[in-house]
Length: 518
Image 1 (cartoon, rainbow, N blue to C red):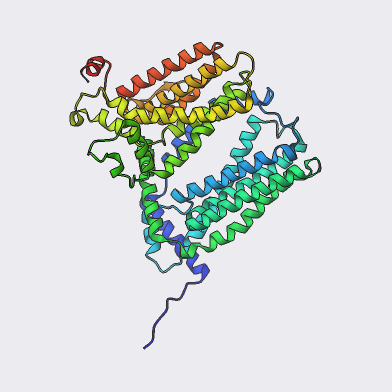
Image 2: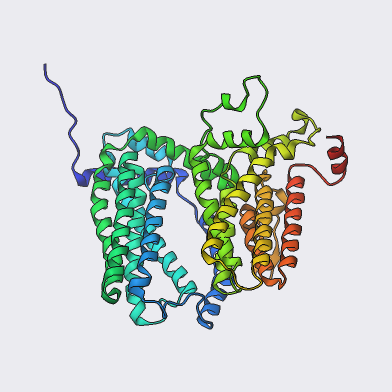
């Protein structure tokens, strides 16, 4: 009895067959059309002309918000560079677990999987090309952020080390993106631990070196060596990749892409929400009654431990950054800390539990749940409000403890501004979570001398929560009085609540009568 083993085709033949399959797929209409590429290019051009060019011009004619001239670049910036490299690497691994570089069109993947070709033949080229794109985009983004926020590239003595550091970080980000998709969870944890340990060693060595000499080159060399060490094992794992899992990821990504292109970005994000698991019986007491509002919210948060852990990290960190920003003298770098902290609290407020979605469902399906909803806001919003407030106050208390005593006359204003920012964030989160389908009126053209600007309205609707938070913080920063800023934040939050209720169909007419009946 003889058995036949499939003979692997030569590399040249495999390459030709893969190109033939991709060309056939492109001819059946799977490739993006010129018209489909023109609209994103149009939006990018509008963003460049109206936002990027003025910002770059303002930066080139004014001092940088953060100056590195008074800080030893080698010793003082090494811990910051190491922290940035760790955050980028861990973020790349996390993104790779959900949407990695090997995600392709489901039909094309199905055709390639049906052949006798090894996955390395048709996935290797895709991985190399997309890693090059990811590294380039990361390099440009980090360099742009450094140019706009610091004076790192204003002098040749700091520009060359800064460019080397950003290149090393970009290489690590691209490789970690592939590693997060093709390697097991244990391998990802090992890489995360190795990156964290390397960052601590580099920061310690840079601090102990005489005058911090060569610290910046060490901070650039270690990420590059790490990328060179991790890249080959990641590519060698391509032949053994789980194709069934890759097919599921590609199908989900294709559906999410379709949702995003049709205007319902929140539906696309819902595809990546983890399913709540466990603790179902913990919602009910031994006598059969439901637990209290806070207990219900806490249990539902624990049913998605990943999101709850992210919220537990983001809320104190955002609260610390927020408090650090509002406790300063105002303007300049303090505004960036304030804005970054508010965005962090906003993100964490959406991950503290699934009660936001429950509130939206009950409000939008009033015929099913009934209109007697006087206790509905208290039941649904008790846990998010308490959790967000507690997490923000925890981070703010730590900052106040280290900066105590605060500057004269800043203690009361700091409390008012932090409280106003939290109220603003909760209002923006309510507006975001009450979002339904894309309103048809947003698709109507907005004719201006610069062309049709309806695309900007769609983008603003997609990211309305971020727009409200950043705009509200900017307006609060412009108000000279802390009391006036807090009142402004309260008014903005009330407007967000009203707009959110209108999105769910609860108009102002009859609203108070429904509350009174509840």
